[in-house]
Length: 315
Length: 277
Image (cartoon, rainbow over all chains, first blue to last red; front, side, top):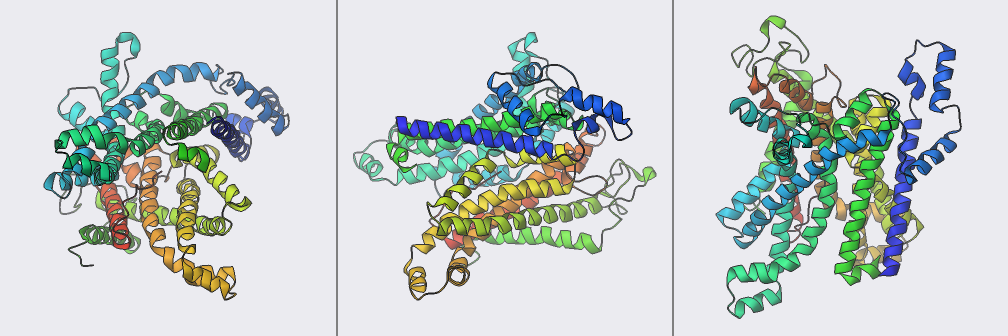
C-alpha cells in the first residue's frame, strides 16, 4: 500500500505542477500583457512601464512562475490587481458560499439517485423502471442553469415563496442561509442525480445477478434484505467512485449556478475577475478549482485502492 | 434489429435530424433576419406575424431559435472534429505502443486535460482571448481530444487482440494500412457513440458559456444567450425563458438517445456510464 500511495502522491504533485504551468502559460500568452490590459491602449509609455514594474512584469516569466509556486506553497496567493487586497481574503469569504452549495447539491443528488436507481434496478423492465430512466434521460439533457431559471420562475416569480436570488450570509443564521442555497443546490444536483441514478441501476443490476445473491434468494431471504443486506454494499463500490468524481464537477458547475442565483461564491468571483481582467485572481481561482478536481480524483483512487487490493498492483 | 426493439435509437435519430434540419434551414431562410430589431414590436406574444413572439429588442424568437440551432450544431460539430482529429491518432498510437513511452505520455497528457473540466478551460481561454464561439470550440475540443484518445485506445486494444489483426501483421502489412483497413472499421461504432456524447457535451457547454457572456457574441443567435436575456425579463415576460431551454433540451436529448440507441445496437450487453464534461 505504501508504494501505491507514494506513486499516486507523486502523480498528484506532478499533475498539479503541470496544471499550474498550463494556467501560467495560458495567461502569459495574452495579446498585450497584464499592464496593457489594465491601462488600455491609449496609455503613455512611461505609465505603462511603471505599471509593468509595479506588477513585476519586467522580470523574466520563469522567475515570476517560480515566485507564484513558492507563494502557493506557503499559502500566499498574491494580491488582486484590481482590488489590491490579498487574493486569499477574497477567496475565503466566497468559499463559505461555494463549498456548502456543492455539499448540499451532493447530498440532494445522492438522496435522489440512490432510491430511484435501486427501485429501477429492482423493478427492471416494469413501469417504474421506464419512468425513472425516462426522467434520468431528461435530467441529463436539461442544462442546469435553465433548470435554475425555471425554479426561480416557479418559486420566486409565480409563487413568491423565495427571493429570486442572493445570499443573506451566515451571520443571519443557518436557516435563512441554507434556504437561499436550496434551490441553487437543487438546480446543480439534477443532472448529477440523473447520471448517478443510471449508474446505481446498472451497478445494482450487475450485483443482483451474482451467484451469492441467487444463493441468498434460494435461502428464502426477503427481497428488501437481499437488496440492502447483500447487493447494495458491493454495488456501492463503483457508485462511491462516481460520487467522489461528481463532487468535483459540482464545484465546477457552481460557476454557472452561482451566476443564475446571484450567489457571492467562488464561481461568481471568477467571472467577475475575467470581466475585470484581474489576471492574478483568475490564475489562482482556476488553479484552485483544478487542484480541487485533481485532489478529489486522487482521494477516490486511494479509497478504491484501499477497498480493492488488485488495483494497487495494476497501477 | 427493428425499430420497435430499439425505440431509443429511432427517437434519437428523428429528434437529431429535426435539429439538423432546423440548423440547415436557418442558413437559407428564417422568418425574419435573426438580428433584425424592431422596438415597437418588442415583447409580443405568439401570433400570426411572430409565431413564437418577439424578444426585448423586437427580434423574432422563432428566427433566433432556428439561428441558435445553427450555432449549436456548428460549435458542437467543430468541437467533435477537433477532438477526433487529435484523439484518433493519439488513441491509436497509444494502443500500438501499449505501456511504452508514447502510451504513458498520452495518458499523462489526458490526466492533465481532465484536471480542467471543459467549462473551466473555456473560462480560462475566455480570460485570455475575450468572449467568442471559438473559445468553446477550443476548450471543448481539447477536452474531447483526451476523451477520444482514451476511448479509442481502449477500443483499439480490444480489437488488436483478435486473430485477424495479428494475421494481417504476420502477412507483413504495414501498421498504418492495418489500422486503416482492419482496425478503424471495427472501432467506428465506439467512436460514433462517443461522438454523440461529446456533441451533446459541446452543445451544453456552448449554451452555458454563452449564458455567462463568455461564448457566442451578440448579436449572433445562441440559445444560452437567449436565456441570459430572458432571465432579466422573468417578471415581465416569463415565457421568454421557456423556448430556448426547450430547444437545448430537445437537441441534447436527441443526441443522448441516439448515442444510447447506437450503443445498444452495437453491444446490447454494454451498459457503461456515459462520459461527460
